Image (tube, rainbow, N blue to C red; front, top):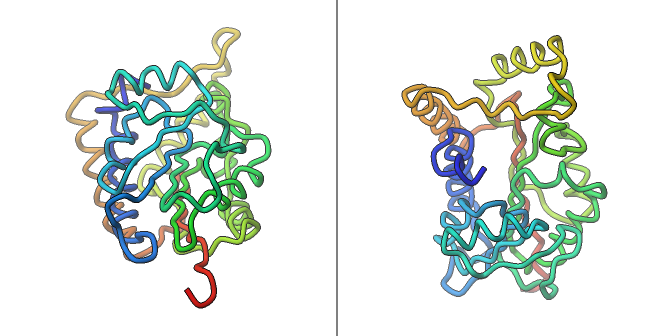
Length: 245
């Protein structure tokens, strides 16, 4: 992941989508200097640089190895923590991202409630998760996923945490069919060896560039409309402001 995050189409396009959505749906009052942005499950840290546009960024991950890679990228506001047990005060964060994290957590409801606890009133939560349970494959097993999501489940999690859903949409819609075919072929082939393997296939540079362009076009559409289907789900939710605030 450390090697791929800067250039691989999936990661590059996801960062651009996150930037666009946070810019479109800022915390109450708009983006201001001094705001705290928390990236839970920050991985090897490529997204942290993007999030610095929106405030003081803190990266959190349960993996010491991942945080070591973040330091190689020059990030030092880091914490070793679980998504269900954030080491931050109540209502101390203006924006929180959890990108492809919930599928790794057994009690995903507890994690979303913890995100809501950390958010200040009017604060924004942005979540991405893998969608379509029928796409389950060896790739998910290799990445230690516990589930893929339907929109109804993600909606229940956000509602249950008392958050107001601003946007909830499938994404990576144009690639659903080829990815579904790839997953089906993987299932028919079966595992080769005892360990599951990921499906990160590094395409030629021109194809990688074309995929980034395609998903950038999707991201621009997403700013106005939802997609009917997609490989992933993205949700933007807001913590309600206090009455009279």
